[in-house]
Image (tube, rainbow, N blue to C red; front, side, top):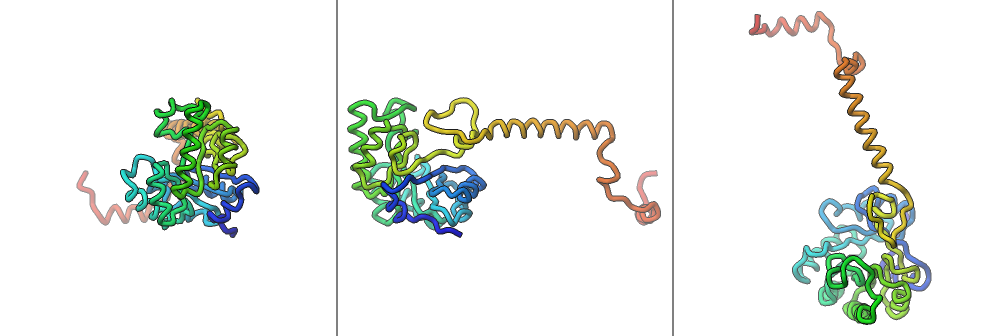
Length: 266
């Protein structure tokens, strides 16, 4: 079994090669990503996924603290420590530098978030690129400095103009993780749902689908309906069950059982 990349290993890759990073929602996705050699795997730290890290011991695993769950830095730190005990090697936290500082001070390797931060998108104009204006660009640079000073080891940069993201990557010691922010960041990040083509309707501009799981799921659903329809028809025609599907008993044995307990009905 290969050893997972540690935070020290990841930091040593800055400027050397790009790091692959995928967000998963199911254990089988995590296992597949690990078998494929993906460098980092992440998911939300929620009860039904708390065992994912143990399923992929050979891959750097990151648990994300769900935004809005923690009212203060003490709650975030407590959950981060539980996540680390569950096998995480790093923690995503979308909260302020003040909270990041508390986690980092206790030795928790933290990934922060700038750009399009979905829970905070109302501040930046909704679900759109962030950093195209002078005001937003300057704000991003200052946020990077604040998070770096707070002790974060990496920053997720979501839908930031590629040239600005490249400049940030050169200016910060943090690893930069690109979600739609160009190829000059230190790591590339995609959600499995997009990568596998799980969804219908809107598809993010920054994502790339390598498979069409949505079509496969639709095919499987059609097969389910067909199977249930055939089952119902077999019941109605008497084609199910047949002798192959039942357990039989000899006539003599059956009669002895019935005679042992006389029926109340005549």
